[in-house]
Image (cartoon, rainbow, N blue to C red; front, side, top):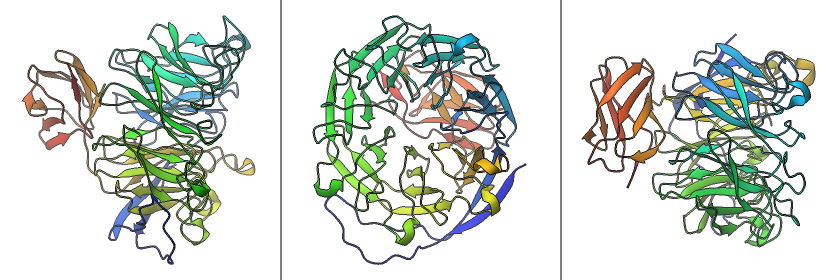
Length: 494
């Protein structure tokens, strides 16, 4: 049953405070504007519980995700859900003897160019060190790689991956494993895997360049990958930001806790997102002015700026301890979640501008019994209808004695429809999928102003060929209802 909660965003009260170096002291809110929070689905255990991961919107317009436990074998699930909240369990892990198919998925799935979804499990496989899997939209699962299966310890291919994958422009997937690596270390790896399951270890962390990469990678417009490690680095076990080439050459860009009191942040649990300005944005789980986490910006060269320190308001009503990363929405602002804090100390949804202007949008457990959810562990995704979608680890209408099995929710902040591209880069002649909400009757597609040939495959999908003469920039789709623009630039590769 859907539950809808409408609120208004106003100006929070706040006393004066000192601003440490690197911090942009900007705790402001937008003018009063309506927002609508909707609980779309409450897990009940049999269909999954504890959704650690963010959602991924597929080319069919549905959202796909995972739960870390529950399902037919209490080992986690893969599910899909419509934007209106119709839920279907696609697969229950540990369906094979010995859980060789994997168990406890903590990461989001990603849709490859062939239409199948790819993901990781943190446990299961041949020796319970995690797997990489492929699953069709209909729910047929194939285990592609079992970590530490061939070589055993110290497991140079890595162990216990907790992050999702990213498909690069070359068609291969790239990801991280929290542990495993070289003989004398156990600090994690970066790997590459083909869609058919051939894995190559690209890098093994040694603590000075970082350790325990819990987050996945993002491929930047320059073709390199960028990521974070939860611990390690030049200043001790406080985490890093790194760059790595597709061939495996790693550069540590920044080691956290470089400032007195770790006001620049520490322990970045989540990954990064690249803005239209070319800079990267992310969160740290702790550190900052109140040791409750930060939002930061970092240039590709490694120069950081602390944009916001959480728990800057009395009672931490702005939130604290952000596990999740950020998403750039079509209004040019960043949106994210905090695991705790807020009006009810059950987590928040927030908005922050690239300049640091901050707004708390929603505090969880605002409804009796926390039926709206609590403890949002994962980040958000913007659907092509303009709404923000996410999950909470607990709360909902089921499993009340245990604190709730978790929820899926949407939050409308007044943003309109747009189109997403899959992938977000490619050469001239490459066929690109464009995902939208109502593309029937589309009359034109352009790549940064250059017209392209296209086919309307479904109400939610258009395929278009990168045209000769196209340059890096936005994609526009002309429909009978108006022009839809992509959320970010499509990168035309040489």
